[in-house]
Length: 472
Ligand SMILES: *[C@@H]1O[C@H](CO)[C@@H](O)[C@H](O)[C@H]1NC(C)=O
Ligand SMILES: *[C@@H]1O[C@H](CO)[C@@H](O)[C@H](O)[C@H]1NC(C)=O
Ligand SMILES: *[C@@H]1O[C@H](CO)[C@@H](O)[C@H](O)[C@H]1NC(C)=O
Ligand SMILES: *[C@@H]1O[C@H](CO)[C@@H](O)[C@H](O)[C@H]1NC(C)=O
Ligand SMILES: *[C@@H]1O[C@H](CO)[C@@H](O)[C@H](O)[C@H]1NC(C)=O
Ligand SMILES: *[C@@H]1O[C@H](CO)[C@@H](O)[C@H](O)[C@H]1NC(C)=O
Image (tube, rainbow, N blue to C red; front, side, top):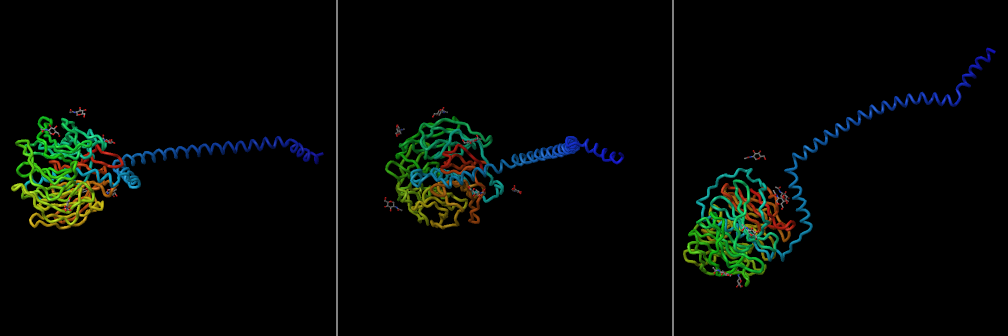
């Protein structure tokens, strides 16, 4: 029996451990294991998730801090580069469109240069601008987008901007004033006529003489004067010839010499003088060549050097000739030819009295990077080192430290430049300086009384005409 106990017990045990029971016990053991496993899992997951969330949060904060810190310096260059890149692959403007759109910056740059040279006493080669003054920053927008407008520095330090075209079809009669002390624009009186490709000259009495220009198919012979004390415009005598893309130069005697330009019969070779005391015009001599897109610079001896341009309105008639106007005899005489035929170039009177002619376009439609110096004492031209960029429709400004700031322009028949470079007359070298915020041509550059330079408007083919302004 006892023998059977074991086996029986064993049998009982065995019989008690039915498959159901074994399953239950397995299940119970497994459940415990699974419960423990799940608890461990939950603890581990909680730790992992919490840690991950905390790490992610810290990471995001770091990233956003970086974005905030770096966005002012990186966003603009990046977008500029993107625009430039897309612009480079999809050029829109053609040679033809450039050929029909002449150069205001030459006019304004030359006339402001002329004013500077005629008014300033012997400029000194100081380091008035620190090396870090070569920073551009945007200032407030003008109320109108403008290209082919003018900008004039008034005796109260404000800058009068008037006319131009906002969209290449409409032409503006509006005018606005930039106040450098508050960096703000305010509108001022409207001109009587809508004008683009006109001239503006600050007279010795502080008023501003605006001449000619065009709107629609009309080329204007009219002229008007802005009075800063009243903010109003008054018409003055008509010019003998209607003209646009001409140049106006303030002579040392206060009269204004207007040369060449475009008319319904093409380029003009005549010149006329405005007398502010009588408000009348008289013709004065005739240039040897017809010229538009030329330059005119008042030299330290009071003569006016006229260079290049188109001998008639065809884009293949760029000339290398130069001639001098003598106010004391009212006569024109030719002087040496430039090395290059060019139009849509600039000419700047340096503090040593020489004239720096820069860039422009030649007869082959090539935009030039070369430059040459005219020496009034010998009447000869000397080529100097090339600019970094080819440029036409650019600006050139004589800074208070004697250097020449060259900005923007077009570098070929479709590309607009945001770059700027400096010419140092002492070493006769070019150095690039910071890029403008906007690429632009047919813009203006005005040297303010604080030595900074105000750039306004202009055209950037990919965007259109600009209302923006920036300070160097
Ligand atoms: C110009 O800026 C650099 C940093 O960009 C600085 O090290 C240098 O001192 C600055 N120089 C002047 C004259 O402000
Ligand atoms: C200036 O005008 C441009 C284009 O019209 C615009 O994108 C920009 O935000 C304006 N800037 C200011 C400061 O108003
Ligand atoms: C200038 O003329 C425009 C229309 O061309 C007009 O809207 C504006 O009020 C005028 N401004 C002044 C100051 O007369
Ligand atoms: C100026 O010329 C215009 C036509 O171009 C004429 O309407 C206007 O009366 C003239 N003004 C003077 C003062 O001669
Ligand atoms: C300008 O054109 C005239 C003819 O219109 C021509 O006689 C003269 O030689 C030209 N001048 C130059 C510098 O090519
Ligand atoms: C100026 O911009 C051009 C592209 O438009 C770029 O190639 C060049 O590196 C920039 N120069 C500076 C000094 O930022």
